[in-house]
Length: 355
Image (cartoon, rainbow, N blue to C red; front, side):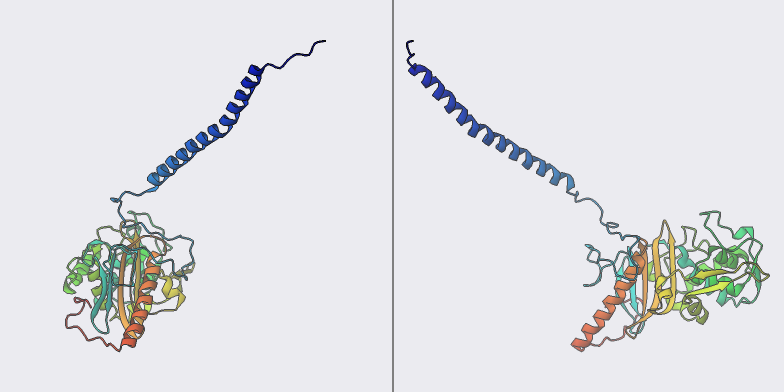
């Protein structure tokens, strides 16, 4: 058998084939990798573009709190870009007015003359007119169908046909913001509901509340409107009534109809009053959809009598957290002023000048 002689051309072809395969092993993955990196870069660019917010988006109600947050702990400071408040103070409230009653100076404000719905803050004026008229507090008033809220259909523990003293109705309206109680106070006045509301507007005019108007006694009507500066005047004036102080700072009370019936526990709508860690003189909360969360208070902070009005705040605990921020800012401010040895002089124009 004769052995075959290897063909040199065959070896050359095989060598070329192996060389080409090796070359493809290096070139093809590299080109694929370049394409993959390009695709990833393009994907990242698209993702960034999708998550970028347009500059025209409003920042008014950007910040919200978790409704399950512990109200005793301050929520993180909101990022406030409006720069209309003093350094160190950030608030969620769209309108605010902080006034030092002791030194008669405006410490901070935001949209102080902006007119907006005030919800149950209205009940402070309802109480003022009731007490100004000298209506007998022990007079029994029967809850009628006319007192039922047919505008927003809010719930009430006061049943039609039950009777309460005017004093108890005033307590429930101020402490627990009981709408049916506030409605009964206005309806049962000698001049009737419309006459009572007319007196509310007359008192507002006398106090210089130029941006204020009332159309009911409870605040359920969205046309009950005022401004932060005007409400500071109302808080200042209502603080002069010991009964308003007592009722707005009562944490809770058990109240039953006069002629028998089930007693109910009524609690203060202001958490800060219930917790008992503030020296509060006057307090009132308010909320309807149009008004947002509202809170007005007069309290002693670091030895100074301070009135704060916080309106149109968004979030369940936002008004409470704003009040805590104001207190923290005032306490820090007092410490810094003490370090510098700077006292504050009294202003000549109450509720009108700003430090």
